[in-house]
Amino acid sequence: MLETGDLMTTTMPEPFNLLRDEKGRLVLKRPGQADVEDVRVRRVFPLSHDDRYISIRTSEGKELLLVEDLKSLDAPTLALVVEMLASTSFVPQIQRVEDVDVRFGYQQWKVQTDRGPAEFRVQEREDIRFLPDGRFRIKDADGNVYEMPSLARLDEASRKAVEPLV
Image (cartoon, rainbow, N blue to C red; front, top):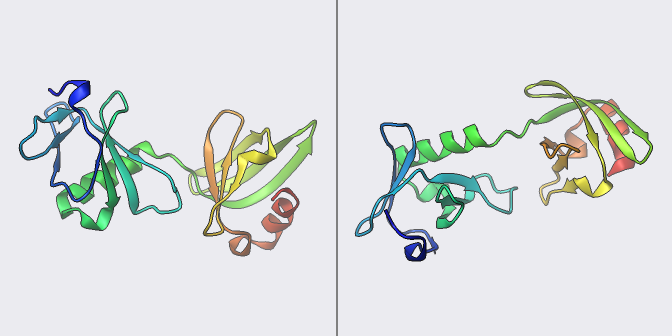
């Protein structure tokens, strides 16, 4: 195993493979370097680019590789990266906004998501972030993140509920 001081952040296209070990953990294999066990796959900013900027990190969070574009990966590695991102990224997609009740300095949202109905509280106006492609990221009081499509893609009732807030 590599010592922390030996780890090095690089950008692609350094050749590498990701495999699962017998315990189901990810192992990073790179030519000429020791294997790194139990690595993590995470999205980095900007979050609006789903197929770009993927970080491969140690279990302690130290970045080992930055994959600039998923298209540069071979099919087996790509499948594993996509699977891991899906399993660690729980971002419900808001499909409809049923109600937003503004009271006492916070907003109580009732929505329908791709994972079912949800109700959550938004503390600050700054917790609703506009993304460059028109979508919104909404962080609730518990730190959960929801994604909402652009206003143009919402139904009329949802748009009317949300427009005063964004």
